[in-house]
Amino acid sequence: MPQPSVDVSVIVATYNQLASTRLALQALFAQRTDCSYDVILCDDGSDRETVDGLLEALEAAPVPAYLVWQQDRGFRLSASRNNGIRSARGRILVFLDGDLVPESDFVDVHFRGHQHAQTIAVGKRLWRIPEAVQGMDLDADALWSVLRREDAIDRRSRIVEAIAALLEHWAKKPGPHRPASWTSCHGCNFSVSKSSLVEFDESMVGWGFEDLDLAYALSVVHGFEVTHIQAIAYEVQGWVDRGETWQQSDYIAHLCNGFRLLDKWAHTGMTPEQAIPGHTLDPETGLWSMTPYRRRRNRRPVDQASIRQWLIERGHLPSVGGASSQKPSPAE
Picture 1: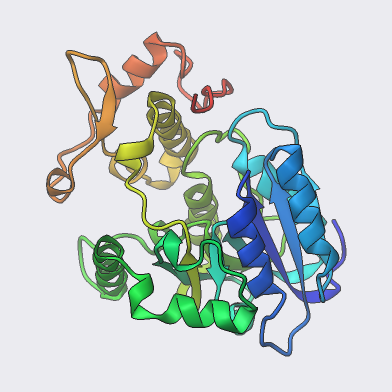
Picture 2: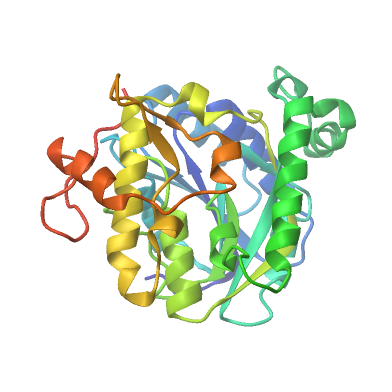
């Protein structure tokens, strides 16, 4: 593991997202901070055209910046992020997705959010319509100016942001029935101190849970404190309803990762409700879909046995308890 030689390493996960990742790099290369930092693109197997474009963007970097590429063998975000971790030289590791453009003080806010070594600092994601930045040749200051404007937000994104703010406020209040703090740690925008504890579970392939698995391990098992900071990153591809875009393989991978999480940490007190996604199976078609939000609010106990059996019968999980070593197929 490289010895720390900068204050912060920003690890940017990307896959065939040339336009948005270029914007993210443009903002990262113009950060306003006194701390030292480097940038690592961890690429999950982008095509040659995308890689060439990313390398071209890195050539003009005013800070150390690297590309770590792995072969495309399906959705392997955990392995890709681990590639970035191994290459990182920073004392603080900041994780960012390639379709998020960080604000001007993003690196500085994450750096200052680590007053204690055992901290998980969680930033904010704000959604912006793609049309706000598409086809524009902007410097970093102009880019930030556009993303801060009210007309860069559509109605649906505004609603999602309001709900996210309410959930964050609710989670901070003491009392029963509050979500655990680790559930707010999403891989698109959070940071931790570099250590041997920071490693994503590479058995989790396909969409979801690799970030929550790490957050649970650090928070519940190792006692890290989750703190919310004002490190803003703009999602420039707009808010997307996964129920409108997911293939059946995405639902299956998501469910399998949930069972991996439960099987891994059930001995620590994790419940099925914390791990198994709220998806609904249509008994007539045999197809999965997103559970409507109104039904999730008063969620009944998870029938994990039936869901697990369904996955076992179709070869997605092993018949014996424990995390599966079989990788779900990537989305077609």
